Figure 1 (cartoon, rainbow, N blue to C red):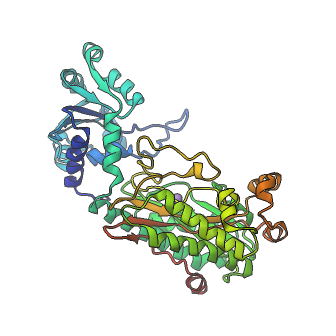
Figure 2 (figure 1 turned 30 degrees about the vertical axis):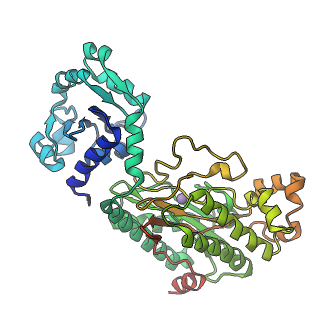
Figure 3 (figure 1 turned 90 degrees about the horizontal axis):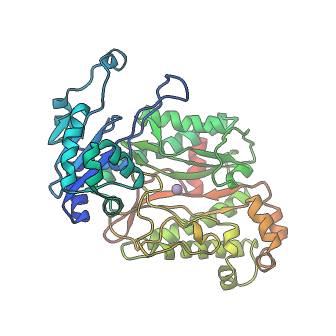
Length: 454
Ligand SMILES: [Mn+2]
């Protein structure tokens, strides 16, 4: 099911055309169908995000040409074999495709060379060098040599456009966030009957599928105990122990739009002292960031603010020692909070636009992993996901770093061996005067415990 109207895609075409700011033709390639290795077993096709954004077409093997600045859409239909209807069902006619997607014209693949041959008279915009190679291969040989193909302006325009979500997109993001949030509730309710991480994973995925989400936005992370400290853990097959805190980072996808939620809950159903201590620190940091998010705020400052609240918490918990300023200055927080605070989210879970031109990554521990260094604007959608982890590799490195090691109370850290980690992640829309969370999954300790009892 697709929830976005064709008028949405039409306005994306004119919008991206305006950002390109120069007449010509955008030449796009949708994703192709394929088979598994040397078999005839079909692979799932997920449409290329930019192709979807500008055409609304989910089916495989289409190409498209968009006239800039008019936004006129020409779809090039896949080359079909006469027997395809036997195996794949009746195919839509060109007229049906034209009507469904509001295209100005839809042409057969066999008619493409003649049509594409005309494009050489104007500039051709493609997404990148890979697409330039595809474009050259698709153009008739005579036109390919003469064509002027730009590989930069289109992607820059797409980033400008995709970075700011329109109301229609926010509606889909809200819908998929609700589905994922509800899946988290179900997972928490059924956790007491689960014996392995993959059982929790399957509750999440099966619920999302039942609600119409065929794909996950990314591979779910279900890490119990120590596995929760492995940032991209995805084996999801370890046994669950009553003493474990389990970290689940999962998000369904709907109409190619992502959700990305992390929650942590105790397998016993009740947070013990260690779990409560670390969880509360992370929740406080997440809430502190939520009060900051508004247009005009630099995301780098939000990250640093989160780091400060986490450091204050670890000092109070006697896990860090020394002065707060020294801890922050020496980057000691990168031992426990090694990743960035969040990232843009949309047609990709780690969406485009995190770094404006000229802004570089900060080459300091943990800050180098920040996926966004933008000043926030209304309509941006970003994740707020601070965390604290007892990651074996980071703990080992910290012990070898005299300057950082002196700021850590190792006796206390020893008590958290095998604990894993806590991350709390919500998906946030920047509004005119603040922000709104799309994520409704419970995150207060009392609320999680209540859901787990129900
Ligand atoms: Mn995330």
